[in-house]
Length: 333
Ligand code: FES
Ligand SMILES: [Fe+2]
Image (cartoon, rainbow, N blue to C red; front, side, top):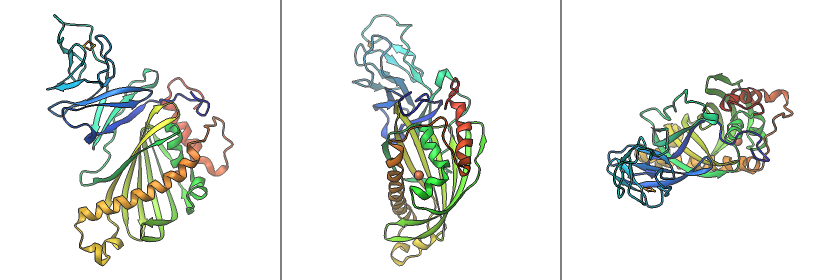
């Protein structure tokens, strides 16, 4: 809890630890994750694992000089080796086995280029899996990582806040459906008009967005604009690194290129992959602009457990009811 956020800073969820390609085979990396450093490594066969940072033998930091040896992580201090299950497979310089030396292992799933770890608030057990982030034919074409000073629940709430679309982003004619919650997933949809800023191709567009949240660590927004018939998915992966601070990873998957843009004489000759790459970068700039607008508010906002909601804020109340499940002991989220 902090002054701004009266709820557990780390609700139950799968959270992104790192993008996959940031940990090649044989590499060890330190990552900030839920109030501490953890160690991510990839074995020579390609398996990824996430460990608590400190060696269970005598407490050396495994991310400070630890090395991958075959399928194991080797501690820099006495050379104990641990497999991805955390089991000690060799006691290095010490004679005999060390049965009590088991590394702290975080549950890991690697999905579509991202390594996720589960966190259960109050030891809440895993009851669901991280979803695929994309269809097999989509490719991730742009991404960024940014620090946002908020709570994962409040970041998600922004996606169900219809009024801010107009006041913060300057969209118009917005309508938002009531969210549909089912277990750990909540879906929403909205429509609005926006000056869609594709760099040199500025124009008024109508957009429809489907939002899908899987817990409080994996958010999808699927956007479809008209005219242009552009379809893409933005994946937002907020990972709390300390109370009230998120490391937010964002990736963009193009599903269908903008037909009008693709028809322009100069662009028509580009290979499809190049065009997707180009478009994703332009979209990323647009999203960056929107995120900066959001951050001016979110970075300083306080979470009010009893907000003075207006009638049109219905989706927010429904979202908060859904989010309660990620705080097993809580009453005030
Ligand atoms: S502290 Fe890691 S092997 Fe001794
Ligand atoms: Fe926003």
